[in-house]
Amino acid sequence: MADRAASGVLTQPEQVRDVIRAFSDIGIDEMLFLPQVHDPEQVDRLADIVG
Image (tube, rainbow, N blue to C red):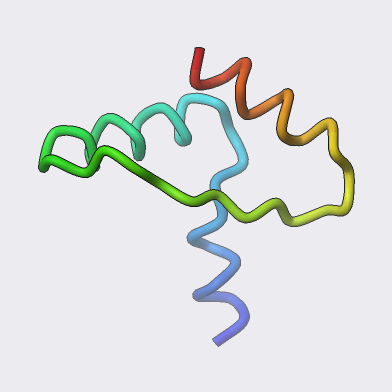
């Protein structure tokens, strides 16, 4: 179960953009991202990726 969960973790900026685009294409206009580390800088990194 842990391996399956780990395989779904987005680790590259391209993966994040692809997932956002795929959901957007089907009409999703709001998403919730859960950071995997306790570092507020992660929010800035996500903002940079999303644009």
